[in-house]
Image: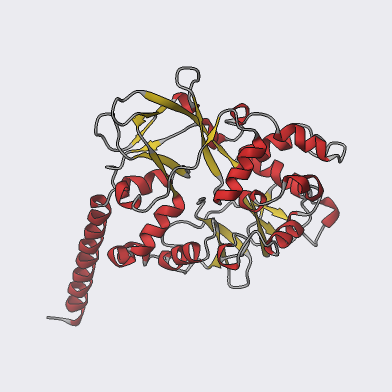
Length: 372
């Protein structure tokens, strides 16, 4: 056999082995189910529809989450997105409560921001914030796009289908533990069960990290090979204030934005109140809803005029965040990093964004829009 022929045969064998391995890994992901991810999950954190925003934010802080479902008596509400997700008695099937929507930190921030550029700052009196935080949580459902729908994910749904769902921008779903509905898989807007658990993108990443050996072929691909490096990437600058950053995030339906260095070419002409294409700029920080979760209500008024960068740096020093549980840390990768490396960074450091940079630390793209 000629040398060229041997090379062709070796290449064909390698491609066949690679295809076989990928098929095996896809089959593993199809054989695993959402129910496998729910082992050891804690009870659902929820708030009643009458809870004030202040109570809701306290629940978010105490439980270290950025979203909670809102429960109401059955028969009086239309659920978000037309959903009908009920909690019912395990024995009789009688409906006890109706989950009418999901409220997230971006919802609360969007409401606080209001529509008027000066509305959030008000008179500088803490009572301005007190009035806003006293409204019932049910009144702000849907201020951000994510809150306009509420999803359930059947425990029989395959891991592969779950991965596809979460890749489309859905951050979380309720999983019924003992559904009274027909035993189907997939995403549903109608559900009745005696209890639920919350499944998030971060739960999925943890599961993939724990089973990395079973999907080596998939996660050994680089960020570039996976097509995750995008051309247009939104960012704010180090001169953007907290109030401006919140408004930018609300307008673009983002939960976090990278902070890049302001332009030095024509600094007077750059509008720091608007999102800009951050590609190729020096990455220096992250501003996210998670940062805002731990702020005490009494201090809300004082940090709104700060620059977003100064705010994130002050948060990193806050005793509210232990070193092992700090969402402040700027975690990056390069386009040639493997997906396994990126997943490990996101899970180990418990961050919700991994930014893609070049060798000099200039921003290229972002990965993992995950939340807990």
